[in-house]
Image 1: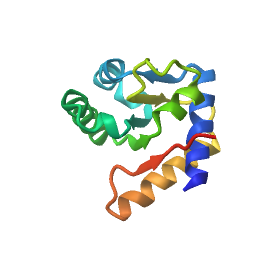
Image 2 (image 1 turned 135 degrees about the vertical axis):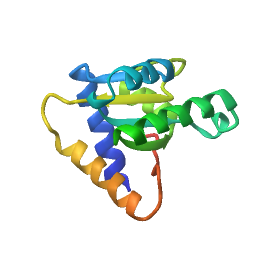
Image 3 (image 1 turned 180 degrees about the vertical axis):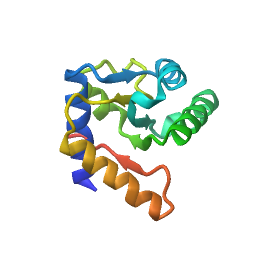
Image 4 (image 1 turned 60 degrees about the horizontal axis):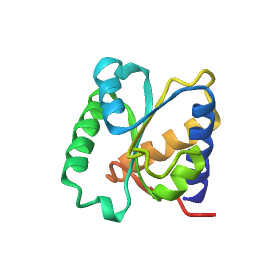
Length: 135
């Protein structure tokens, strides 16, 4: 599991450097509506305190539907503080949904995360959930 977390963190950093990230629930929903074919991974992030946020869960349902329709891999992630640190973003920024769009070069991290998503689908664990731990 830790290797998937490490791969996800490296993938997000690389995609951010290549300007291949869309961050935020509303921005992500707009992109999925306009150009879903450009998206290769969707990260839905929330911690325990966000689980009761009805509006956020409705947005997640909409984004999951877009992803399923477009065949985009998804991950549910907890550990918002670590996610903010990985991306160098303030914790106040909406990091609840992050889309990785077509990376300029296929990277091994995307392959590792994609394989984990595929394996989770075969075990009926969809979307798979991982926890990013503080370091």
